[in-house]
Amino acid sequence: MQDTLFRDIKFNCDVSDARYWGYFSICGLLIRYRDLYRSEKGLAFRAEIGREDIGAWIQAKESTWPDLEQRSFRSLTLDKKSYDPFDLDGINRQLVPQGLIYGAGYGMYMKPTFFLARLVSVREIDGLTVYTSDTELVRDLFTAAGMLQGASILLRLEPLTMLLMSRYSSLNPRKATALEDAFAQYGFPYQQIVDSIFEERLRSMALRYSELILCHEHAEAREQAPDWQDILQNAGDRKAEHYVRAIQDLVADTSALGPYSRMIETRDRGALSLHVALAEGFQKVLFPEMRAAYARFLQNGEWELIEAARIAGRERFLRRRARIIDIFRRSTAEDFSRAIRMLADEEVRE
Image (cartoon, rainbow, N blue to C red; front, side, top):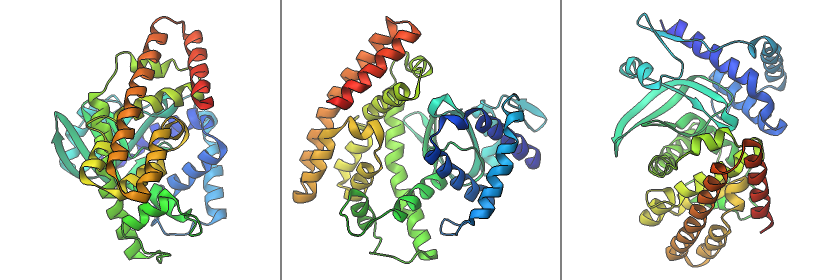
């Protein structure tokens, strides 16, 4: 049964990748290739990847895409019953007792995304079921360390650990950065040897930080805005979609249930530094108050600065979200996308 299930999930992953690989930048695609190769081959995070080996793997994968992009997703069969590949609840009722967790949904650019992983734990929080997974058995090019799907939150430790490994590799000891402070706060000594002890410490860091990701997903579940899924589907291009996603993410981040509130409550400097370091694109540009507050925080350790920045940012993000919803409700699809791009450009200029 599992061989057939793995094969069908892998087929759906490949179909999705074949249809959507062109949405990623060249640099982003290469990073995703590397992580997917490491996952498929079961390589340790510290293992070297041979250039010729991954090059041949990429060539073989891309050679199948012209055919796959025309194919439809397969249903998944469990215990002689057929399930739609997006029927998360039905599929997981069968898999969770076996120590497995299945994920399906839509990621950036509304890319269909699927994975199957080893289940670490299941818990209930505020009416939501939280699944934490580790080793991933099947996955596509897109990964997110946290996913909210209906009443389920999926926390994925393997992609998170891969991300942390990548960021650790980019550290520059001559530059004092939020990322350097984060690893120091999580107990990584200067120029630590990358060995099995390092790997265990990295996994521990990922597990600890995943609780902040849970806060984000929990807040997002409770901060749902009307029409938001329709807004994402009608964003029209990458810039508009990145912008509206960043606004929603920042609304969740600054919520009373969100990660900033949890960091402030627990005085977790390591999580704060890591959260600031991982902010990219619009999430970074749209929150200058937090960047300024964090710089001052490093000098005096006053958490009140972080709280004041959280409150100020939240008020603005809620206003921006309300404006986006208003524009969506009174615009055609083409006019909406154009208006959001203009709004995003205004934010960057400010």
